Length: 141
Image 1 (cartoon, rainbow, N blue to C red):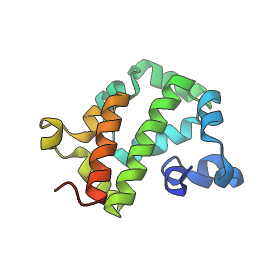
Image 2 (image 1 turned 180 degrees about the vertical axis):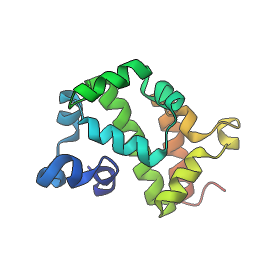
Image 3 (image 1 turned 90 degrees about the vertical axis):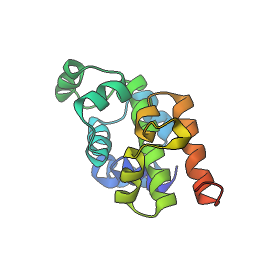
Image 4 (image 1 turned 30 degrees about the vertical axis):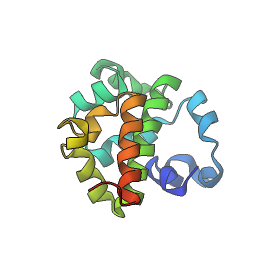
């Protein structure tokens, strides 16, 4: 797992001293810590509506998370997808604020939709990843 992805998920603040050797697959299957979700949501400045759509959970469900320490595996997978795309955008754009800004800007390649809007599905995340890789290698303007 890339160090950048681990930082997006909260790094040592969320996973403690073992952050550099976390097995992401095992963590997702077990359920990511709620703090990892909070870190990603805060970084992306997600509105409640965006959280509903991207995580496919309701406000009431998120309110119940306050009594828990971990997400369920399905939501953990969605949070990890958001974190992976954010980490990639940070790597390509070399700055967190630029990455978040790019994810929120409409893209002609996505039919005028914002990259953040299409991340609710694996197909959308793959399309956004491909756009970022094209940018990195100079194939996208």
